[in-house]
Length: 109
Image 1 (cartoon, helix red, strand yellow):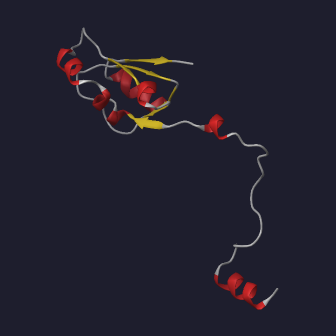
Image 2 (cartoon, rainbow, N blue to C red; image 1 turned 180 degrees about the vertical axis):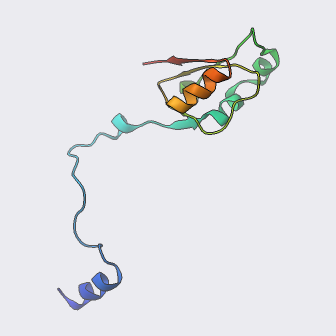
């Protein structure tokens, strides 16, 4: 090792070398999956639909129209207001919270 690399290795251990496995020809669009938490779902509903919403008139939220694919379970939904959520993927916790609020989950391709 040259003297520059010796000092670099001394103060920055693990900088040189390889780690992990290689992924040949990784197509990034296969792994593209933007997420949204359920605490942001109610803000996606238009104001006129929010005013009409009730137990009988449940709003449908299609998160793919807003550019999200997966719904995660952080946060809470509004009390006594069920919603129907349409998404490509959904976590178990998010599905549990939506159904406990009286809503439903619709999976799309």
